[in-house]
Amino acid sequence: MAQPPNQPPQGGFGAPQDPSASGGGFGAPTPSPPQGPPQTPPPPQGPPSGVPPQPGYGYPQQTPPQQPGPYGRQPGPYNQQPGPYASGPYASGPYGQPQQPGPYGQPGYGHPQPQYPGAPGAPQPGPGSRNPFKGKPVMIIGAAVVTALLVGGTVWAVSGDDGKQDEKPVAQKSDDPKPDASGAPVDPGDGSGDGGSDPEDLNEGRKSGESKVLWYKEAPDAPRSGADAPGMWITDRTAVKAAYKELSAYNVADGKPTWEPLTFPQEICAVTPEKTPDDKVVIAYMSGSSDRAKCNQLQLVDLDTGEKGWTQKVEDGGLFDSAISIEMTLSGNTLMVGRSQSGTAFDVTSGDKMYDKKKYGDACFPAGFAGGERLVQVASCGAGGDNERDEVQELDPKTGKVKWTRKFGKGWRVERAYSVDPLVVYSTNKDEKAWNISTLGADGSIRSQVAVDEDFAAECGWAILARDLQGCAGVAADADTLYLPTKATTGANEIVAISLATGKEKWRVKSPAADSMVPMKVEGDQLIAYVEPSYDAGGRVVSVPTTGGSHEPVTLMQNPQGVARIENGFFSKAIDWVDGRFYISTTRLSGNDDSKEKLMLAYGK
Image (tube, rainbow, N blue to C red):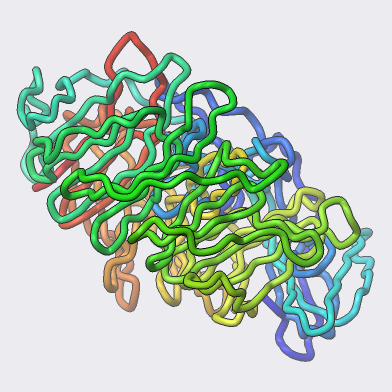
């Protein structure tokens, strides 16, 4: 956020905190170890390599472009020297990558889990996991000069350039991984999809006012090394889930198969987290099973019928730019497939190639894409040089033409897009141990920067090569407000509503239970949130009014206590609330041969 006109920047200072200290930056995810037997491989401990452990102190301040100065505790990102986060798109995280326990005591909420900021292979920050950075907001400030300010023994540097859009961000802190408690779940059903052959009645003993289990499915066998189970798509009549090499569809009401499972030649490695308006998705699977196999085989699938459409192959982009790992996102009729250093756009209706996004300018390589109402590209520029930086660009989905460019300062890495319309981005600075959340306007200008001193806990997945900008969950936004969950330290956590116009807190609401509450989506004037289950209580879906009056949560669905152990056992999960039904599914299979793994669970009234 910029300083008010004619006022010098303000903010406190203090050294970044110890990486080993509790983390959980604002929006920056960090893995949380599960307490019960995890369904996913154990996550790495501590902040990922190449990722700043914790951010600095200070609220983002507004400063006129001509007034350089400290922005909070750390300098900000936009074309400035060091200053300050859930990517995977939409309801999914990095597919084809190992999942991490999430902020609610369970791994990835909503998408393949934790991928955080850092070099390839290192986790990327995003909504859902604990932030590796701890501290307070660091602001982004635009300036037409380069000035070094010595404040309390700390040197602050602010820079700008002629005519280019550039400002700086505000840093936040990170939270500690929170273990999740969950006993060994019961093993109901064989996953056959008959909608009622479970060997035990999951609704037995259901209490008055509790929802009922509509159906429960077990996962297909996976190799001992584990496998991904990306995506979860709900149409008017079908719930579709990918797992290992299979794509399965169930009737939303009773769980009966709506079409025979589709089996792919090799493991599914990426999906479009969102579906097209006519209920189609694109599935990517590996070209083979060897170490040299690529994630480059694309297949269009109709979710309601299971019919296959066009197929395509994603070509390598060049040296160090292969399709070993890809990310996919949709914007209108454009399917953008991102590699580590480039991207290719296809027409999702025909599969025809539209254009490539390649290296441009000062050694700028496309590093990630985010889609939806807009198509956004993040590029990494000038690697290793004095002009090293990230740039954010909005593209015309039909042509790939650049609409505007926003430069970030040296040392700042754009990790996630919490929202695309409005565009809310999370960035980190390893050297400054800082992070920032900024809202960009329609022309790429800085609309606001979050100035809330809080430990937030959004859920994000792992990104190995691609950044998976949309691989975060546990965060929601509407035209004027960003909703983020806080880290639960003692007792219940809260959801904080932050103004996108000012970056300041509008209101906050406490979880109605001792378990964490996380935002799922905004429907009209209601924020829909999920309250995690515990050993003695099922989870619940609640709504919170977003405007006026009381912001107390109202329970829309209370899940049965008798199924809490199963619900609580989805360590890496995707969740959704559609037409009065609540769905939860795994996003990672462990490959454990000792018992059947959970795949999907649906609740209704």
